[in-house]
Image (cartoon, rainbow, N blue to C red; front, side, top):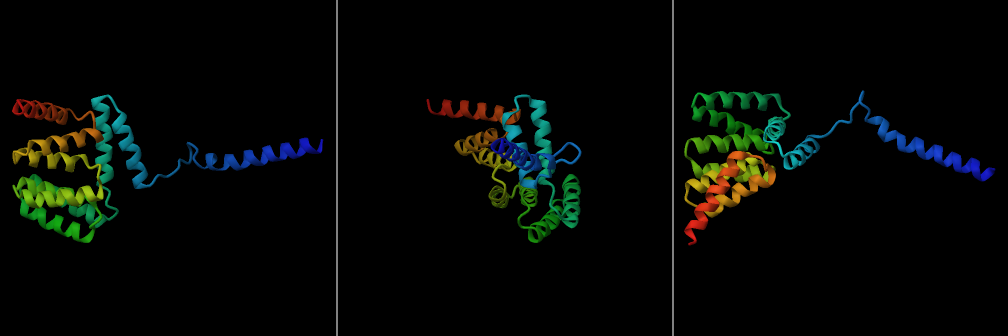
Length: 194
């Protein structure tokens, strides 16, 4: 009898202990994920998603996560830089982006946005430098990789372009435009090898 009471006590105690963490994440009170945990989960979903439209929605959520700088000032300057880019005032956009990467050097999206402006201005070396920094901070940045691939393609470095486009597809397999680029470049390279 004493053994039965001890066993029941142990089971009750084990149930109380194991119920603790589960009860912390109920529908009424969900567990809070960190920025990195949210990104990891989204990238995992993106890699597995077989529906193009659903993948686009996941990719948009990733972009939204990337835009979270954690600073109202940085966020405002990012908005101003986008407005300047939309108005093709690239020098103004660069002024804002230079400030962003100085004030928040660990904010990958600031570097990526500046890489995009340099690309639009045909400053490919500067764009490549900012792409490199973006990928150091966020190696899964499919936008930066696609930019790298486009620069390599424009420079006639087809093998490097193909490699970069394939890296994009490793992260975001349902990106149709990149699938087409990979197919076209693979055909071109196969034709050149004949």
